[in-house]
Length: 246
Image 1 (spheres, rainbow, N blue to C red):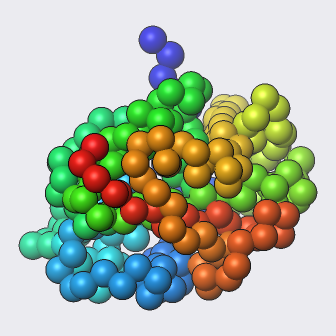
Image 2 (image 1 turned 180 degrees about the horizontal axis):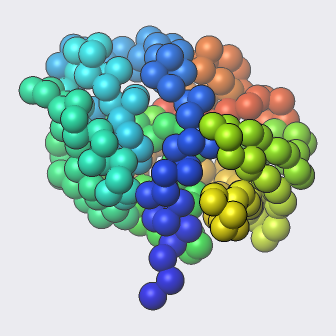
Image 3 (image 1 turned 180 degrees about the vertical axis):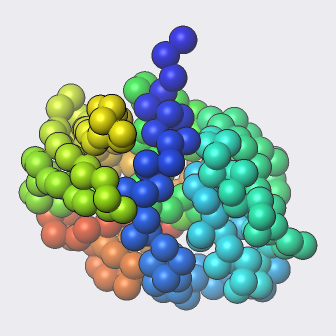
């Protein structure tokens, strides 16, 4: 069976080299404003879904929350586990499955870690399990790309030199997805990976969330909690609340 693009790419050391600028300082900037909006009491149980190497999880735990980080990448979770302590734990897990029922006060999905699947039924399935993970009245924070902004600002080709590796990046929009192809050489051997994200707009995401009893309450256009503009905002950040048992 062919490995899904996210499983192979996220386990690659070159993924973490290319995106090494996504550091702890960036995580802090992203989270501080959102925590102000969420108003979660200290000790609240937070699930960081698709946590990667755990930079957001670590910061949230340092803010006094009980944090669990989940990611499909074994390599990322193995790295993150060195930071575990009494109120911070990491597990390898597929977001299309429930982790703990009616357990978390908040589930957070940062930095466009949604929309990766080929079939939309898997996206709905993921949202349904997110709802199950939450306590009644719990909050889901979805930090997603803004499809309108992506379409208006897409850079078709780009080159980046990171740690001596020349990454050649190409992007296109096709069939309701944005594709990014990453090509480079290591020791004279060509390497390539592809990223694919579904271009869900605000209305589509609202409909999907409502279908699993996660009801959108607030929408922001960036980490400074600015008003969302469908053409100009660089993010689509949705806070949705679980209304009943799912």
